[in-house]
Amino acid sequence: MRVKEQALPEKRIVLKNCQIIDPRDINTYLEYEGFKALTQALGNTPQAIIAEVKASGLRGRGGAGFPTGLKWELARKSPGDVKYLICNADEGEVGAFKDRYILEHDPFTLIEGLAIASYAVGAKQAYIYLRAEYRYLLDRLAGAIAQVKAKGFLPHLDIEIRQGAGAYICGEESALMNSIEGKRGIARFKPPFRRARAYGANRPSSTT
Image 1: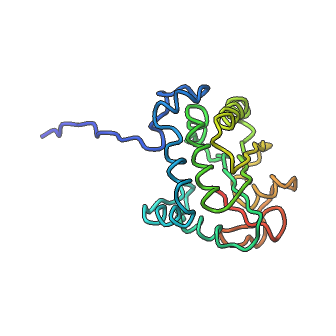
Image 2: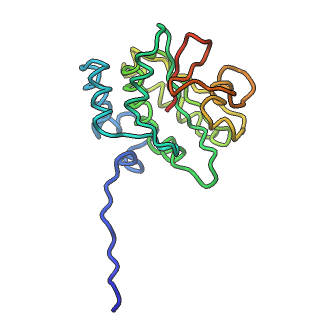
Image 3: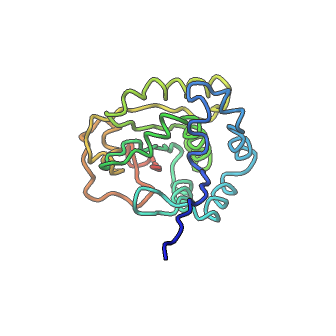
């Protein structure tokens, strides 16, 4: 007896706006409740946001599955007044293009996520590390950041794009930090725990 094949229903979460909004126009993003989550987050304490993320069970998608809420909590509790948030958009895995798809079709969701995460961990500076092969997306990403700033959604955060040079190892977070700092992109022999440090020993950083 042949089993009848049936398509499973799809519910998009991260990709829900892709190919629906215009990635070059923030107004189309706002039409789909864009930055509503950020507005709600800024109305809560950083501790409340971290507790909500921990309760959600959200984990990293890079392979290790490290709990996102725990990572944010460690960064928040790290001593030091200066903290950084790093978006790893290097994506050097063979055949992988999830990051590229988001950058290409919905950069505003990425920026909103960075704004929420930075508020939660206490970072005022964020970096998006863009792989060399995605250089064609640089103008689109920079344009999206400029539009978000113009709308007043980033009063607490400065976002800077840093371009990689095509080194696969820079997908690893400690090598990525070295590259951002202008050093050779190699993994550190003894990287600290998840609240790894960049720009000197007294400046904790969280990589997402």
